[in-house]
Amino acid sequence: MTKYVFVTGGVVSGLGKGITASSIALLLKSRGYKVFMQKFDPYFNVDPGTMNPIQHGEVFVTYDGCETDLDLGHYERFIDEELNYSSNITSGKIFKSVIEKERHGDYLGATVQMIPHVTNEIKNKVYEAGHSSGADIVITEVGGTVGDIESEVFIETLRQIQYEIGSSNSFFVHCTLVPFIMGSNELKTKPTQNSVKDLRNRGVRTDALVCRAPFETPNSIKEKLSLFCSIAKENVIDSIDVNNIYEIPINYYNQKLDEIILKQFDLPIKRANLTELKKLITTVNNLKKEIEIALVGKYVELHDAYISVVEALDHAGYNYNVKIKINWINSELLEAKKTNIKSVFKNSKGIVVPGGFGNRGIEGKIKAINYARENNIPFLGIGLGMQLAIVEFARNVCSLENANSTEFDSNTKEPVIDLMADQKSIVNIGTMRLGNYECTIKKDTLVYKIYKAKKILERHRNRYEFNNNYKEILEENGMVFSSINEKTNLVETIELPKLKYFIACQFHPEFKSRPLSPAPLFDSFVKTCALDKK
Ligand code: GLN
Image (cartoon, rainbow, N blue to C red; front, top):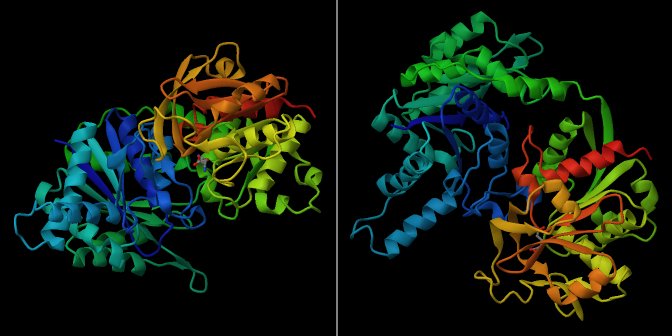
């Protein structure tokens, strides 16, 4: 039977619950267990696809096309597994499904209630994750903080699961805060005690505590927490600040958190293989050089809005022993006439224009792309970044002055990017391309050299596409369309081979990047930037 680990949070948000959940998964995987991860998000949006990235950060996309919370990106990067639709459960999804079933008559005349109908719906998603993934252990993070009105129904479901499958099949980790009070020079356990009590009031027993504290908690604190919270002393785990997040699993490993979980599950404690992780930690802690890369976007005030892009740049940096410093550029500010664009990019070795939606700031992005192209500065465009690179080239090289995307100018006379441009064959016309699509790469192109493969799979999240009617004129002027999706004839990558590095893709390679295997396009881009002597 699949075993289930649940990670809840108490006292305050932002304690690193997601990293704790991923670290547990990583450790269990390193001991040879098949793991799967899941996140409960107690908000009413069905998915974060419609949420403003400035509020909620990036929308992460899984291979099967689910728009999810950015935490899933952390999970994938940490455990190096592809997650899917069953990995992100929101209140919106749960209630939508309950109401649909009600309308469909599935409840056979019953009064539809929180318990059991909503809780059953959540419970099914938990068990389904176990069945469909075939995992030995499923690790589920519960978003929010215990006591939040929004998450009550999820906590109630956990209570039922704990009762139903028992402690040999479920393990509850509660992440809390142990603050240090300056004046009295003391670590305080009361917030943790209260938070464990909050869980207990809701009928949920905690099996282990992960205590965020400024330094290792002394024995006396552990004893106190153990006594007041009815948790074995060994199960009180410290989570102190670290140099880089990859040290966190090692920190838990040293405190035997994974062994404690496996013991409770009565599963054999196989030897952990942490060689790769340790290698990664050494690399990250010893990066020799620093290079600056400009990231031009409209959500730059919240860095989390581009978290996977930043991570992918970092991963590539590890491969070339360089630390990446991001030069955050708000594309809207580039639009002003008086902006000295040269000074904005003065120290940047390369320019990235990542994905985006909507009108705001696009002319600034085009300006940045133009600067990169005319000054032969390495450039990587993603999604909207590719679309705008085409618009820029069409306008300034091919004299198509009105070139635009119909996303921004529905009356443009030169729609080089169009709503599912003349792709009548595509099944989901008008809707988005989400998740994995196959991409066929032309031989003798830069992209082919980089991927070393004819066919690749990359994840998408877009509605607009290159309009093939303009292919010829752009090609005549030197743009190479290096790959397409064969089924739909949609352009996937473009390049300007005469330049040092000018590549853009319709898909989002950042979603598949891993610390030890950077996404090929990021890898080659950072390599070019790192070796650039200028
Ligand atoms: N807004 C554009 C589209 O929908 C680009 C999206 C993206 O950057 N992935 O096609």
